[in-house]
Image (cartoon, rainbow, N blue to C red; front, side, top):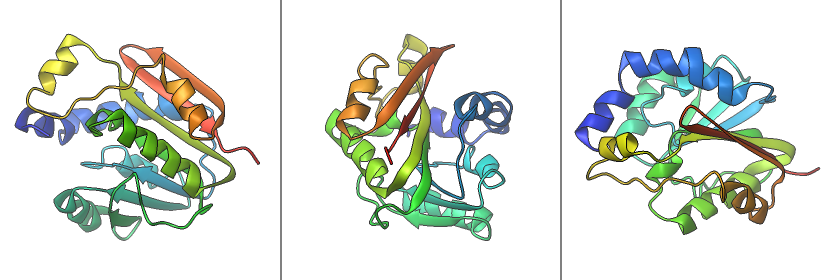
Length: 187
């Protein structure tokens, strides 16, 4: 992440927007169940709210410094794993839900994004849900990511990509420059 992006994602303003607006919209009607995995929590704006919404929370963060920061803040309430969301090493069928918020655009290629979808499918229990959100591309969003990885996912192609990973019941919705998705691992 570039400096501007780091500042925005670690700000109190962003944390408040996540708690009041983003997370309620993304998870509206989603049952997280008893064991949730968050892929790519970054600075933890979503994680800080999720710890109160599920009985057990695990988060996989690829950046060792960010993972350590999250352990310091939430290690007594969540298991923070330093690792890659495309190959977590976590047990298959372990989680009732997998979530990912505003991070897919940081995955540098479509192939790696598809591996992340496949990994989410692998670690979900039958009947489990994969839910998340990301920003839809815009000039402002691109400028925020100047000299940063920014590989946005088109909401037009996302449903087929999730189905190719094995998911059923795929829903993608776009609102106010953001997209949310929900998909289920069939029982």
